[in-house]
Image 1 (cartoon, rainbow, N blue to C red):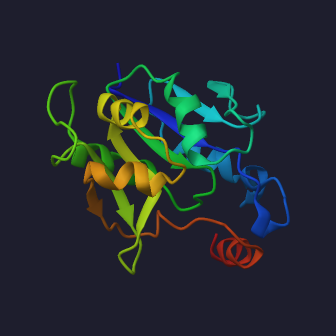
Image 2: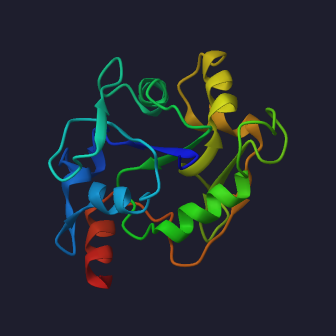
Amino acid sequence: MSGYDALILAGGRASRLGGRDKPGLEVGGVPLIERVAAAVPGAGRLVVVGPARPGLGRAVFRTEDPPGGGPVPALRAGLAEVTAPRTVLLAADLPFLRARHVEALLDAVGGGEEGCEKGTPGAGALLVDDDGREQWLVGAWRTAVLAEALSAYGGGSLRGLLAPLDPVRLHLPGEPWFDCDTLDDLTQVRSRT
């Protein structure tokens, strides 16, 4: 058993990309979502919240309620499928994310089911960008702590849900936190790969 499941949120509207299928956009001939899935080869389960896609045969697909309702409903839908003690929570548009980055996040959380409670080090870990901004969709969390926080949360902000868990913040080389929100982002990434 791997000790972690991966949860990829892939059901957004991509309004800054003109409604294009962001997870399906290719970088170096590979769809963004497949690049993200390749960064979690050790996941016991790969859960994708969004439409079913070819190329992700091992994935379990779910839809948030309501569809397109945002990251908190998507997290709620996906977390129901997680069975491992740790959950890696990722966006579907992270072209530079690699397995070594995920391993660093998991190392910061630690292993096993026992351990950290809400508000103590090790409840979760996430990446920060070069300016120190938290990237809420690039992290690893203790599943039980995440589920408890989610069950008590009535808001719609992922930051509002996760910030009180006081995650470890990591800055890693290689821009693993970089996401493709705009056509300019996509053009920049394509020119570098």
